[in-house]
Image (cartoon, rainbow, N blue to C red; front, side, top):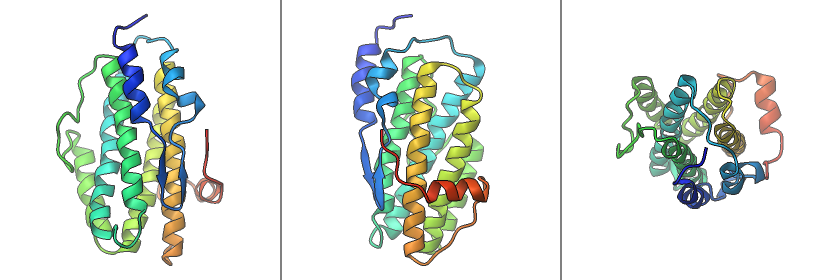
Length: 218
């Protein structure tokens, strides 16, 4: 069905998914399939409970990534630019999900929450753990970046198996491509710093296939 906020959504969505260059490569977070025009040519479909829960969770999980990277940039940004660059990209990710919440009239679990504040207790605990781990050293911080992007991909793929609304799938698939690019950027930087990383959520073969392939473009 049609919705009176679609025109406004299109304009904001265009800004929120602007392409962001990240350290070590180009992060093409928005491709042709994920463009505002294509999203807004898709119908607004009824939301299942699984889709509602997915959007609310993904909104906070994308905020988690951005908030951790903000802290890591404050600690280690003088040594490498990757945290600051990807922080800007994560802001577009969480904004993209926020716009879907707005499109469907769902409450925003992030609202005006400050950096490091989450409604979901599991994400709150994870935030504190990741910040503590990444505060030890630059190598540890880059490993945290790898871990977050791994987890992001695992969760997005899990949610994609549960949602069928076309507009949600288009956004999630775009976020997934962005996460693969972020993982490539973090891992390349980690290797340059003499570090290593063992995948925690993906298989070694899946991880290697991503980090050893080129940055994705639309």
